[in-house]
Image (cartoon, rainbow, N blue to C red; front, side, top):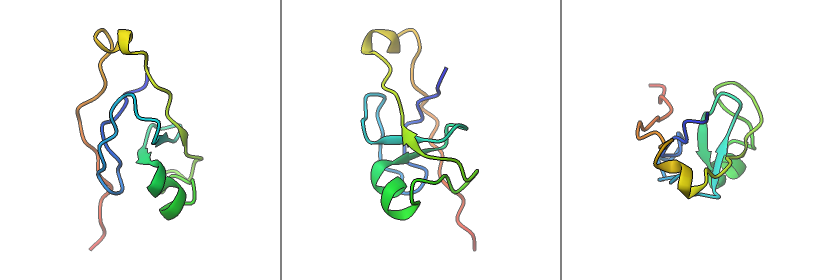
Length: 78
């Protein structure tokens, strides 16, 4: 089951579970559509995999299978 991470790892934009702007790779790295398209060229910077639209979990399933609340941000190199 997907974690449905709550934010873009690049710009920290909130991405609620019903967001159509969320993009993920096969490892569930999560980015907003803007960062995926304009910054990352639809490639995950972590694994090099394709970024695709994250599926929306039906609202009636969120109570039993909630989205993650753990925010993940890309590590900035010094």
